[in-house]
Length: 243
Image (cartoon, rainbow, N blue to C red):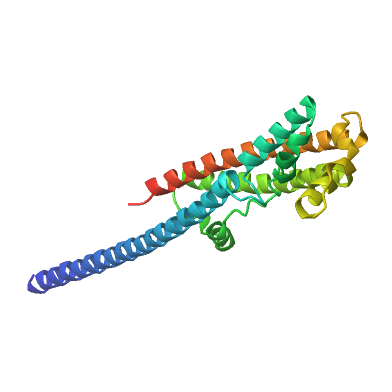
């Protein structure tokens, strides 16, 4: 009986030790998981802040294209307004008094690239860390945004090529006249008889150019306005994911 009681105490003690070891292991596993999750969360917060910085840079770029005040390369808003004004003026018929406005007014924004800042997104995609960045809805919003940006960049390039083609239509007529007005020291409007002839080929080509510029840049402008809204929306979603 004595030996049996001692064996029972040893058995209970051994079982207790096993239970303590198992509990210790479970606690250690939980601590490791907690530390890993905390490390991942802190890393995600860092990426989110970096992506917010990228979005701010993109928004500044888009705002510049939309509103920049540059006499050589006007904003999209100003270029669209200039093209519309010149086109309407052409249908009223140009007068000698209009030459200064026509000669100095730029109706082409320049076809600037969007230059979306996507460094953080590309890093996340390259490392596979995008899909652990946050909720499924947040990840889906990020992928959707940069997919839209990629698509609009392609459209922008295509539309820019059409705009350059539109400029080439009138380069030997009104294009050359505008260049001479700006650069020549002996400019004489009488050297450009097509200026007063709405039925001339040069006059028609200039109107076609203005129409190209008006419609093409109006499309680009609306796309930039859309991208600005999308950029602001994603920034808000990312900010809400931060502590």
